[in-house]
Length: 341
Image 1 (cartoon, rainbow, N blue to C red):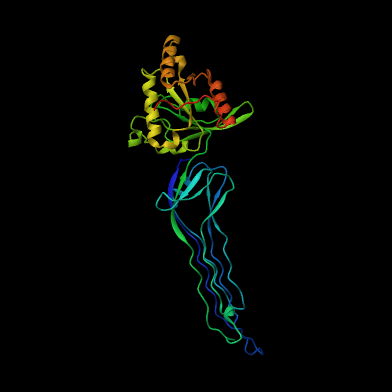
Image 2 (image 1 turned 120 degrees about the vertical axis):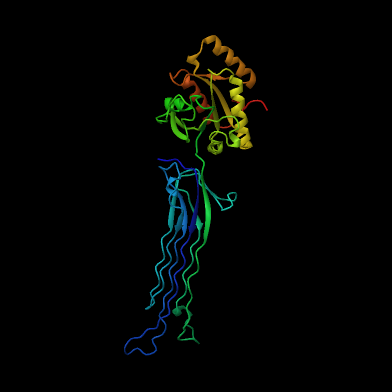
């Protein structure tokens, strides 16, 4: 299934049905009087959060959603039928913005959450509703009220506990495949991951959601490479798991590149707990690993873990540390750090 995390759609609620003008005409019943029924109410447009979705692809090929109008009133005091709501189903984590793209209308964060986006018009009154003691045969009725309409932006921000960041080929997809049942594309060339991938990690009878994001490169915030728009999927997570390819010549420079791009995206990511991990430790000698481990540790001023995502070496220790932080929440005793300023 194609991944789509942003789309603009047009929605319009149904108009109310018009009231009817009619009179009772039956044999042997003189002066039957007005019998025009009221119009029915139109259909609202509501948004509903459902399980089983993780993309907005359903709105890629259809962007206009017009709800049904209410039925017109009829004679013999028959009211028009009111319409059921038009339901738009979205995944957990969807945000709805007004046409300007900045005014938030709703933030859908829980399964089963429902929100009305536009209100339908009420039905008009038939002439029977205008009957009075002084007007026994009214010849007046009203049309239904129009339904609301607007353009809205749907933006999906995946809900995860831990987000994987790093340069291309840092081993993020390999790590995801090692600790979850996800089947991401893995290859020995950059940008094999073109869209966010989710997986559920099970550890010690508990679980958390891990998100693998496409690789960042220098000046991604300026549009280089795949850009940095997908970093919005980190806004809801609590931990950034930063993977660094230890086979690179300068691991500190690799760390600086990602740090710069994450902070350039926005200060909302600045205070996220970060765990720095050197990956591919089985590909270099122990002496070189220790040297690079000390370099990045001195720069960060914090403990740095090292793993081999391909062989699984030390992987469980990393996910257990993530789980420990998640279960404790914002634990001041937990030693975490987000690099130098």
